[in-house]
Length: 536
Ligand code: N01
Image (cartoon, rainbow, N blue to C red; front, side):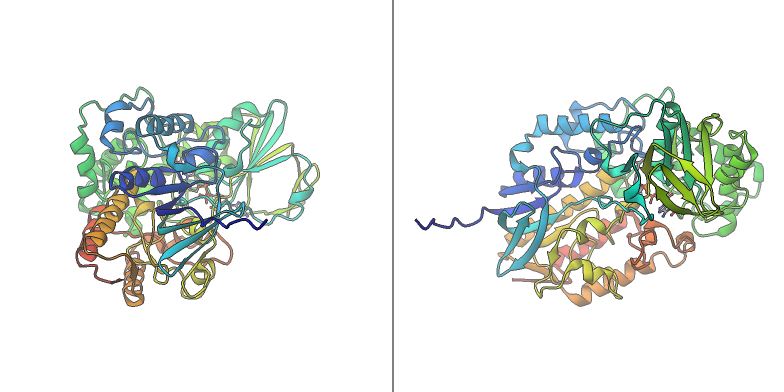
């Protein structure tokens, strides 16, 4: 008997990813009456916070500014930590589901492998072979979801446990009596070291570039009960990153008295977290001398905590390796103190390199062998673009987004949310948008609002299809890249801000750097008349 072929399930909106962006969009688009389906590769909500389950994982933006403004959530949730831990963020997502009934519209274990807009619909393929169609596609894969695993020779021959920070086993890793290594000292590496140093018999940290980690100053933290919902929401309209601090509007050396500058820095230091850099004098990312003074204060504070002079010079060198802040710093609880433990060693990957892995450990190019049982690869991600380019998206002409963005022309978007050749598609938290310089959830809410308003206005105007034009996309991309021209970010070309951490990835500035208030003005202007788009 010949079966009757059923048409694939069809939706108004397919949203890819159930992290902050996906669930926020689901909440708002459902309220507008759209039939939405969220497709999520993992088995639960959380995105970044579902996958990054390594010990000690926590966010480095202060509560409540790493959360959503949805009124029923704002009113019913209280953060318990200044920098919430991954388990607390998982509880937050469970609370979102309990209050908003999200899971009924989400397919878990569902990884998108291909998508193309044909005729008037997106045609989506899932890893298990299923097909779906939808009028709109909104891609929310997250900025750090494609792990970077360096091609260390012999890695597959290692007989111990090796895992990337993003692919941590749910059951955890046993460390008692084990010789452990952490490779990489970005935000993930710093957090893993803080945990592993206390639990492993011996820990070797392989550092290429020292982090300029900032103290959390989290002890005794209490939530600010005076912060109103309205004030919380207003920061995104008035402050660069949408949080309750921004650069201090005065240049460093306009404060002539060095003691006054030092006292100002001390007050930022005591506040804890990113304000030390991003609430500092307004020229610290422009003026090398201002940046150097900021670094020197950091180095003197940090060096005072490290007993061993060799480790001190490696972790907090007197001469900075790059302008402070040009590579993303992180926050730390007791990272530097771990290097005073007798069981913790530090290897400088600037004076030697990892030569190869062996069945029982690894060797470095200076001939040393390190016997190891467990290895954490905290070696980062194909940041900002990787989630989008690894989703199998194809333009209407059949070009793959991966090839288009890896080519000489580099990344091109319009408004950091749409792409020429990909009609009826938006993406969030991706390139040429403001996310890397804002609080994640707040930047996401800004982009969600813009997208929901745009879809509504498209509908009101009687249109069903939109696509950005190539000239508008070119102009936006050039403008975003030019925003960094006068800054010190360009002096750290290997940073993921510039895609420089991934071999073969074009080095270019990937983030809109004029802040959330200006970004909203630019997008309102464009969507007000659909300037730069073709509509049908
Ligand atoms: O990755 P990274 P991450 N041999 O790219 C090193 C967010 N996040 O996962 O700097 C040896 O920053 C590399 O060295 P170098 C946050 O936005 C947030 O730590 O290239 N080492 C570097 O030290 C963050 O910025 C939180 O010289 C190699 C490290 O690996 C972003 O995610 C927590 C190497 C990679 O650092 C990424 O952070 C975690 C090699 N071949 C993540 N290749 C919080 O909110 C790379 N490295 C706290």
